[in-house]
Amino acid sequence: MKITLLAAIISIDLISKFLITQYLPTNFIYPINNFFDIVHIHNRGISFGLFENILSNFFILLIVFLILIILFIWLFRSKENLEKWALTFILAGGICNFIDRLINGYVVDFISLHYKDFYWPAFNFADIGITFGVFILIFSTYINYKYRIRNNNE
Image 1: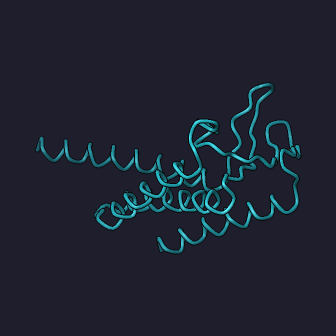
Image 2: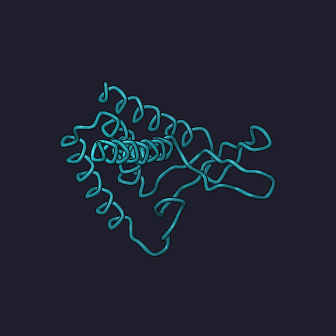
Image 3: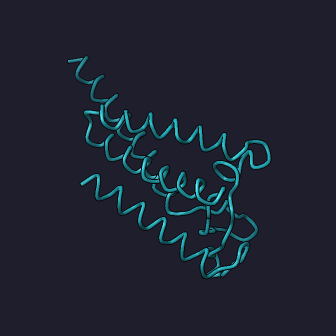
């Protein structure tokens, strides 16, 4: 089941990035409504474009590759089901953005959310997977912590 989830997230992300790059010019904005736009942005930095002009693509690829290896090891050693789901989401998103950066030298972002003059940095489906996985991981860690405290007090 987790392999299916991994494949689904990777497929959705890579197909959506392909469609964006084929049908929208770079830096194009297509308004959908008052808070949501489809855009075509190239993110050469890390999350939210941080360190774009500081870190080389090779260095970012190396760091991401090492993190992916650590996450794979963690996934295969994990005994907690919720933790495994979280790591699967994080890995899927990480793999997608790694592939994108490896092929293009940047990550394609295309979802833009905003309210009036406040714009959240553009993101993609891989970023959603990573974020969702991190929230599940935090929740799983909290539940396991509470469970251990309760069992130690009994």
